[in-house]
Image 1 (cartoon, rainbow, N blue to C red):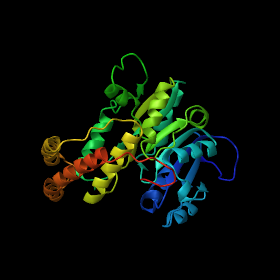
Image 2: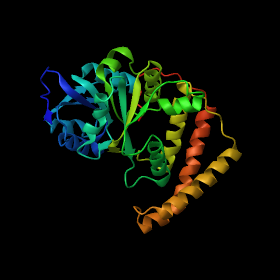
Image 3: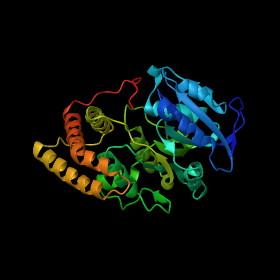
Image 4: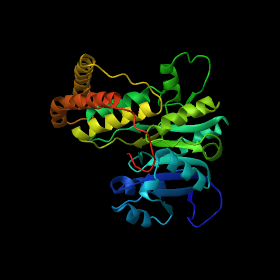
Length: 324
């Protein structure tokens, strides 16, 4: 792999974009992993920072191959800033990482971009995610389940529109997209099917729009990043509120769960997780004892946040505010 000079205007094969805001915790690991990628091509590293006040900019400055573009925090938008990255990028392919998603292997970039060479209708590729070792079990097992459902770990899966889609549940599964670890063709995102400027779920909308426009979406399971949100119990409640509000904002109908439904979901989910915890060979015995007691509280907070988000009026997005 050859890293492009940030001052160059020459086209490159891939632009890897990291959106940062106070991202010092994982940024050094991300940049080090990117600089060591086993990829046959020219790569541009682009960081778009939206007003960091921690050591983020200092870390970027220590990596001279990184091109830095700064915007005020008031101008950040999940879709808007990713569109900006597509316009700034010099690569034919634009890969996206959040500032807490660490490529897990030196073949991450190869695996993420390989599907574009297989079919010229593929406009976007989603990679896999694995939870961090300290992630609470509820979230860890949810991440595992989500990505295991998209296909086997040894092959690339393609998603497209056809008459087999008969209901919203199937359509939502086919169009599901996460841009935490993703790549898209610059010409598509910059010109034909851009991200929409919404406060949340911009990636879900992009997945829908790409499929509706006749493009293919690929899942590349070997393009793995380590990623899970580091949250306390209180923060998880608020996170689920934000996620529920975001889904409603983009048109997903979320029913208000009754207390009876919540009780069944909490008890059933906690029981299933307890079995998984006991069988989890990667978890030390002391951690198992802790999470058997604590993890059910995360189930309570999850459904508390969902209920609050489903009951509250949907907020209108006015742009500017950053939501992680």
